[in-house]
Length: 335
Ligand code: TRP
Image (cartoon, rainbow, N blue to C red; front, side, top):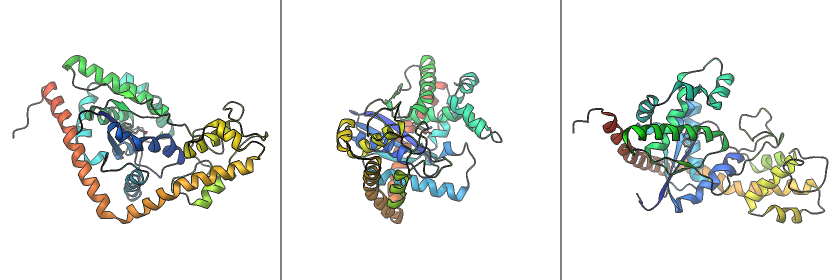
């Protein structure tokens, strides 16, 4: 563990394949961070259990997400990339933090309100205490920074509140994490309704590009992307949300500025522009997809990294857990 570096923690739920939005908004930005931070990235499979999962498919998705993390560039030898469920300290600390979290503050979480509407037949206690487990994830590693999307900001705030409450009673046990504001995590919108976030659960299959879509599918989805009745490729989120979203995607992939893109397509129609975006995205996905296939076939390599990183995560997180046990007055383990 490099003590000079600050600690970064993040992760995604282990469900479904990732969208281009997850990649450009999160993964792609995480890849370079290990140079500056000591990074921990979890496959958050315990969180996924708050919604009913089909076991075989769930197991496959969790494996697939691990391989996608690695294929997208999160080197498991530079970063600690591991499964949340393999490291028992998460559930252990979550229990203790439950006793420092109020029903009132959990009831105010917008994600809980949304999800309990969406899954009205299964409003379970896990869904309610979801943010407490997330706080445990972060606090176990003494994370300084947590890159999260706007939808997770409230969860990070409650994590800070819980940590501050605990520290106020027991002294400085937890580092108070900051949301990560660096390198803009782009917000990628639906290709069919650019007022909505690109989502894997969208009913319209053309709304989201999946990371594992093949080249033709990617290009076809971009060709069908909703734009406007104007013809100019110009960045204006209000008046031209569809075109602006495509420009954001193109910019994330090519590194070009909005001004560059405007001049590149000056005098050309939307057809050319959409084709260029589709091809650029397909070109970026191609090496990730082939690396993904290799990794899914190389069980020995992936299993080796999982084991190594599970152990590293346990070693590090257990230090925090032991400290917490001691502070709250649980009796010590007999060695
Ligand atoms: N709740 C996060 C999401 O759905 C996933 C997550 C779980 C997470 N634990 C975390 C993200 C800890 C950052 C840090 O996106």
